[in-house]
Length: 390
Ligand code: HEM
Image: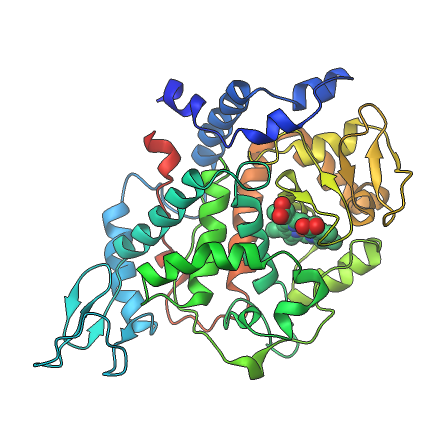
């Protein structure tokens, strides 16, 4: 429903932005209504495109997907044992347990894809209701939490990654790169309380998927199977990228996780969303004029605007010459300094559907790094965005 959807955007972002200057910036600085139009375009084009690719369309055989995932979730150890210590809903006389979203009893609760969709819907509801944060949405910081939980992966040793959610513990929670992510972790606590059977590791990545989809991004296939780990599995500091560095650093960090150049560029397109906070990273400002709507504007702005050093007391960062209200990190500009990276920036600037498709694939890959799934790739769930229902 186009009209209703048009009114449903995380709207503070545009109000905060400075809509003046060059024609391309005017294009980027969409009103909430035109954001919604762009969103609709992207949803339609990218999802249609995506659906014709490796994973089946969400509407045609959802039941089959759900059914197979239900089986897989159980096999994958995605079930949750309710011990007698876990007394939520426990019947004192019989010792049987009745907890979880499906209200199952006696021992083992086996979540189905429908149960994970309930978790998705609960996160989405909170995203829409709690719009008094930052640019009007917790979406960007939720995505950043999921990425930082996953981006510690080291392919050589098989350590790190989203399996474990070790950022719950110091020292990992106190790593400089994770500053501000407590906002996201705290946001998800009531959801965890509502669905105690889901692991934090699954919850955080599912929240990343929900954030992208609810901010009008592509469908990101997802599957359960992550197990939480204890403090001993915290990763050493320094595994996440340093924004003050150049292309060699980007290749070293993302190469360690197993990504190629194209995938690195696609991942960085997430910077269409959110902003830098001086009290977190030291950097300051948003990358785009619509930081709560997923678009390919990051690439368009990189290509179309003139970027010069900002003159200020903070860390070295770029600003757009025209409005001086947008920013780029040194690692962002490295994507147009490096000829191979730049080829992909150009492609994604021109073709939003290609970006959506590639981003979906690469984010799915990022969230699965190092997870010992017993399930198959084709058993991934495609969550239905609540934004489609409005
Ligand atoms: C070279 C790689 C990258 C570097 C150096 C980098 C660096 C940063 C920095 C410095 C911030 C600002 C944090 C703050 O002050 O709150 C940020 C924010 C963000 N990053 Fe990245 N990032 C990289 C890649 C990625 C990737 C791969 C993703 C996701 C797939 C991502 C998603 C985000 C999001 C959504 C935000 C906004 C968070 C918010 O608004 O609270 N970044 N990034």
